[in-house]
Amino acid sequence: MVLGFARLMSDTDSFIDEVSEELRRDRLYSLFRKWGWIPILLVIAIVGGAAYFEWQRAQAEQRAQAFGDALLTALDAEDPATRIGALETVATPNAQTRMIIALMASAEAASADQAPEAAARLREAAQAPDLNRLYTDLALLKAEMLDPGTEAESRQVLERIAAPGAPYAPLAEEQLALLEVRSGDLEAALDRLRAIERSAAASPGLQQRASQLIVALSSGAVLVDEGPAPVAEETEVAPQDEAPAEETEAEQVPDTEGDAAPEAAEDPADAAPETRAEPEGAEEDPAPETDEDGAASEPASE
Image (cartoon, rainbow, N blue to C red):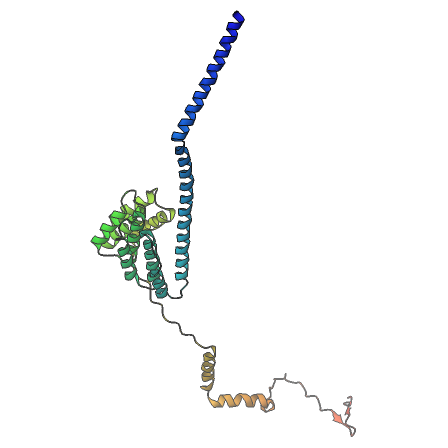
């Protein structure tokens, strides 16, 4: 009886386990049917998002390559005016690319001795909205270096560029030091140059320039800001032009000298013979006598 009861209890437990397992399976299937689309949607979104970002990156690379090719094509022109015109025709999709075009065009204009035009182009490009300060400060700094404005305007612009933490603060401090030199305040210029020399943000080249300016200003040297001297047009001189000059010099010699030299060379026998002094008491040797055959006879012995 005990064994039968135990068998009955074991069969009941297994039945309960089977029923519980079926209930859990049905509950899982119902949850999957209700919320199973969410994981599928997440997988699709991840895969689609990755594909979209890859397509966007490929498009950006393609646009960048097209922009670079257009720049290289524009810079292949021969003269600066043609290069500037070609640069202005390049498509610029955003403010940063427009600033790059303005910087390159201003460099071409400066190389063609058009510094005011280049500075005006840079100042106009720096007024674009939503432009990174890196590009704005660079454009204004180059404009002040190419064609400075009035002292008050230049000081205002350079002091804004030289603010602490600005990307081109050391270079703006150098320009402010030169502005102090032009205005005659050497002490303020030396203070700014010493600050550049001690600045950790200044490059080694800038620190070296500051040290050289400190030495020059301390020694009493006067800095002169002169533009490049105009290059004179060189005219090629033919090599054969030197020969007629030599011929004209030869023709200026009197004809008598020219006639005497050939005569002396052609008839050396007419020149006076050289005479040598002989010692006194020396007797002249008698001329040898010749016989009829033409042979010289020996002188008779005494």
